[in-house]
Length: 94
Image (cartoon, rainbow, N blue to C red; front, side, top):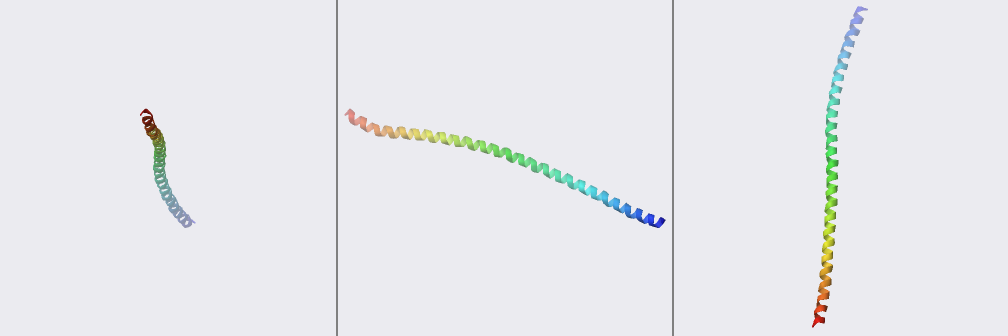
């Protein structure tokens, strides 16, 4: 019976040692995973911020382009109207 007890204790000791090693391995894996996850989350936050900034800049540029197009269109219509009107006015003055 004593030898059986020693055998079981020896086996149990190696099982406990295996569990301790596995526990340490899992703790280290969890730490590495959480570390990488924090970096991914940080990167995603940066991407979202950049996306918001780019969207805002794109809207500003579109507004500027639209404003410039309206100005050019107004200038074109003014020039076209003036060039059509001038010859008639000169003709009438003569």
